[in-house]
Length: 437
Image (cartoon, rainbow, N blue to C red; front, side, top):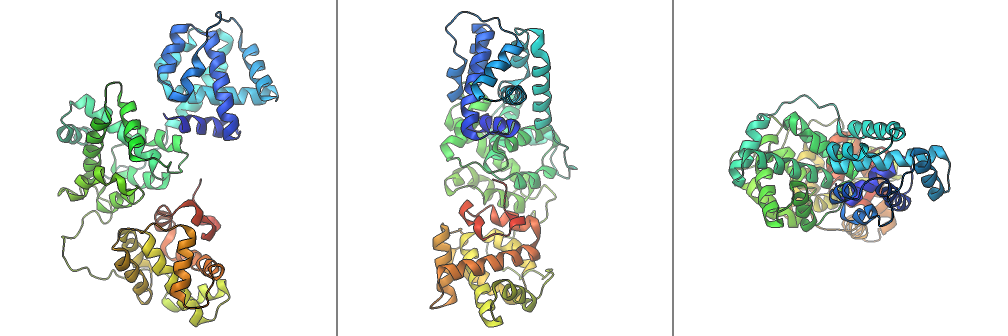
């Protein structure tokens, strides 16, 4: 678990702000360090995120306080009441269990008085609840043994080492992409490998934590254990991604890769160029051969072009001609900003008469999702609409088009689209479609 994940659990479970979670986590861990042996405190510290390790240092005499004093000290630190102190203590202990695991947690428990047990057991139950979610029905083509065996073969690892590497990569991946995308992958991933996905989702709060590739690899290496280098972590990630591609199919792998920065391409290229894809039964699990002519997808959307534009006109208070230009401009700018693969996923729901702007956007960006902050995006819409359109008007028109797009493509495809947009774009999205941050 990384530092942000630890604090996020404390914040969520205690119902406090992040800054307060930072301070109270350290002081609570230090109280525990005073109450247990130096050796046990050092064992716990080694498994904690690095910024929290100094919190487990205690140079004074071994303390002998009981649970009521422990909680009173937290209450004093918070300037709050006993109920809040208990909730915060339970939240920190929950994050501690998830960080250090059951064995070290039990070793710590054995050194604490019995009156700590209700608090410790409640925190453990919460941690287990957070780690355990009902698994969706498994529809994939690879069982856990075959999945891990393919990773072992690609990475040159033993079966045990490959299992550990697979779990590490999946956990960190689940921290880096949205929880919605992870939920889309799960039916094609063996249920025995869902625990690391669940933990990664919990650590990130489902928010797709920003993570440079160096940090991504360091997180994998740390989870695999001492002695694993960043270079080895990269090799293991490449192997896991290749097998993941084989297991979940082209569409879901593409949707996942679309949420990763360009510098992750060194980890993804081998999977993208592999020939054994589509083992999973995901829709769109095969990819057309390079150079094959693409056929326009069948239209399955609920609105024809006139109804689509009519709803935009109603929302933006425009005449039909202006609404049509605004719709074309927003769709073309959007196709510039997201990957060609995601545009193709949207097309079956978009009336054929409105697909031209999407094709132009993809052609202009070459399908590579141009980097555009919100201001640049609005400037692009205004320019496409024509002279005299302001950024404020472009924003108003985008706020009209996006809800209609949400209505026609559905929650999943809209969510996959939004996952490729920066957080500042949220001001353009309908409230019901805004991601959890």
